[in-house]
Each structure stands twice: as structure tokens, then as C-alpha cells.
Length: 363
Ligand code: ADP
Image (cartoon, rainbow, N blue to C red):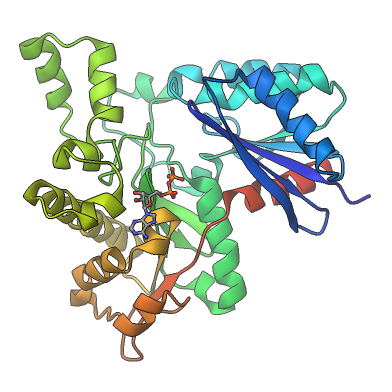
């Protein structure tokens, strides 16, 4: 039987959902602001909305769950034991994991027999080598889970599948996907699998993000504590919510606003975003031993021709050459014929990936 699948992507401030038919067609999507509504209320509203719109009842639900820890390296059907195991991973992602798990519990109360599947942002990176995932810290810390995980895995997996459809030979080439949204990271892929990525233990590493700092010298955290007497909560707020594009510009975390602004600090924030993306790309190019394809995706990657152009120019030394007219039109292929690197703009779809995984797990 083909299932109708509900996908849920719940964060601290919003709960996004979508309904997919058995053939993968998206039937409906919506969002709720959390805070005004509890997760329980949001789930009741969601069910009411689906009924009142005359949409088909869903027969399974798939959830985006940020962290699968060391153990969950592929999507899994949730039962009580698994839910407990996932709750135990909260220390690895305290700002996200509880919000991802609440809807599972809320839905279970309303529909106890509904198959529910957890799809992890970390899972796609489980193919990376032990060396890639290791920090140069005392080994005991690694054993308890202090290692590089990487995130945005559902987006990367979707792009890997899409790229293979668009160009079956691409999978055997050296590919970097740039997921540039509010959260941003790069993923180096070979044969459709992740071999390196810029996010590590948490969602703070790597690129400059909307409000997150990206790569930082860890001594800065000690300095903030020692010299400025900042508490853990204050430092957490600074690194996650007051840094990145917002922190550097002092204006906004939104790339559109910064690009429209005449302020020097806005231009400097955008400049740093591009500089760091190119610099991190250099590291992933070394991991891959070269670069054949670069894919831009997510909010900034899909919509900002300027950022695509600036980043592509940053790897001009590799022979990458962007076709500015195609780039402005935002076609799928945006490189010139002479370019030594294939440049792509491919919209991502994490919800479609969750629906695919959920269908496969319950099949
Ligand atoms: P999230 O990580 O929250 O899913 P998105 O992938 O939607 O975020 O990306 C949001 C980012 O995309 C914001 O910085 C926003 O300014 C940027 N963005 C969206 N449209 C454009 C545009 N036309 N030009 C530049 N940036 C854009």
C-alpha cells in the first residue's frame, strides 16, 4: 500500500510540515509559530487543518531530528526505547534535539499506532573516515561522543540524489555542495557519499552563518569566561544568536538586507561570509584531492546570484568560471563552457528527503 506521509521539521520557534502522496508528490505544506502554540496544540491544529482541507489522512510521519549521535546512522522507526535513546542525545544538541522530539511524543499521544520515523541531520556524514571525524583531544572524550558529526545531512542527501539524476557521471567526480541558508555548511562528496564537511561537533563550526559564528579559536570562549566573567548561557547566546552576519554587521542576519544596505559594516559582513566560504572550500578541495563540481543550494545559494558569483570567483585559481548571464537567470548549470569546474544551482528539499526515507523505512 502506498502511504501518505506527513513530514515534520520542528525547531525552537516554528514547526514546518508537509504532506506527501505515495508517489512523492507534495500535497500540502504549512507552518506554525511555536511559543504562541505548544507542540501538543500545534499537532492538534495540524490534524484539524488536514481534515478541513479534505486532504488524505496520513498513514506515517517522518521527523527531522538533528542528532543521531554515534549510533543512529540511518533513519529509524521510533518506538519507546528509541525515543529514550534519542532523548539521551540532548546534551549533544541541547538547543535543537528537544524541539525535534516533542512532536513525536505529541503525535504518539493522538495517534498511538501511527508509524513514526526519525531522519537524522548527522546520518549522511557517517560515511566519513575516523580521522576526518576526530578532534585532537584526549581519546576518552571521543569515546563519549566528542567528535565531528556534521549536519544538513538531509539536504546533502537530497542534492546527491538530484545531481545523480541530472548527471549520472557526477557521482564519480569530486563534488562540493554549499548549503548556504541561515545555517550554512559545505560538504565534500565522492560517489554520492560525504567524505568531509565544515560543521563538526555542533552547528557552530565552519562557515559564517546568519547568527552563528562559525570556526572560532576555542581560546576566545575561555577569554570570555575568564576576562569578562560571562556565564555559559551568555556565551551560548553570543555564539548562536548574536554572531555571524548579524554580529559582524550589527544590522541583520538576513543576506538580502545586508546586500541592500549601504553601510560599511553590512558590506564587511558579506565580504567575510564569502571569504570564509572560499577558505573552507580550500580545505574540502584538499580533502577531495581537487574539485570537479560545485553545487549551490539553500536560501542564499539558491537566490543570491552575487554570492554565487563571488564564491565561484574565489576558486577561479582552479579554473572555475561562472556564466554571469546564466547565473542571473538562476539556471541549473551556471558555468561557462571553458570552466574547469561544473557550477550548479540546485534547490534543496529536505522534506522530500524525509518523505522518501519514511516510505522506505516503513515499507
Ligand atoms: P534556513 O537555514 O532557516 O532554512 P534558508 O535556507 O531559507 O534558511 O535561507 C535563508 C537565507 O537566505 C537568509 O539569509 C536570506 O536572506 C537568504 N535569501 C533568501 N532569498 C534571498 C535573495 N533573493 N537574495 C539573497 N539572499 C536571500
